[in-house]
Image 1 (tube, rainbow, N blue to C red):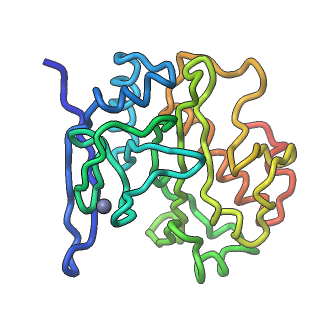
Image 2: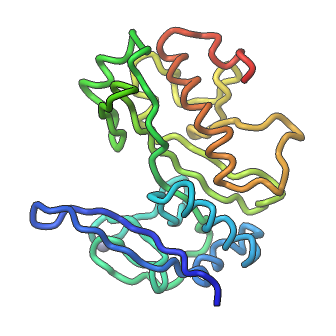
Length: 234
Ligand SMILES: [Zn+2]
């Protein structure tokens, strides 16, 4: 029997943090995934890799540029016995037509002590859904939320990785608009591959680890006044 793939989501209930865990309903997710050209085998590999490397990321759905939320309580929708609200458990059955299979979560900590121009303002007022913390060794850090969705022609084309709009409100950030200088496409999407660089054997997990994380660090450095951040070959 194939291994179950579980996800966990923390939420506050009566002043305490409680965790809800579920086994990812891959069959239901495949309904949205097939529109993205994902085979059952490929989807299982994508979810297993994310479970191992980004265990707090949630598989959800994305419609018209928005992560789709519960109509009743605005909770995240997750693949738990069909599509369900992670907070109130309202059931939505199958994903709506046109929905894209999407990952939502926070990247690992990015140290911000060296960002002298923006650090203090960032700590004083982090953007919506971004988290600032402090830890011995790296000092103050930022957790950046991203949305990574599978396009209809995946895996022939790469996953789409987007910032949330709040990221562009960090002091010094460029506008949320296409930019050659900052490797940005429309809608806060990262431009992560030059033509011909994408390989259909790469997974979403690899894109997040090998490309998206570096993009966030470069854009933070750009905001801090290092305007050649994207020119440096890494
Ligand atoms: Zn709900």
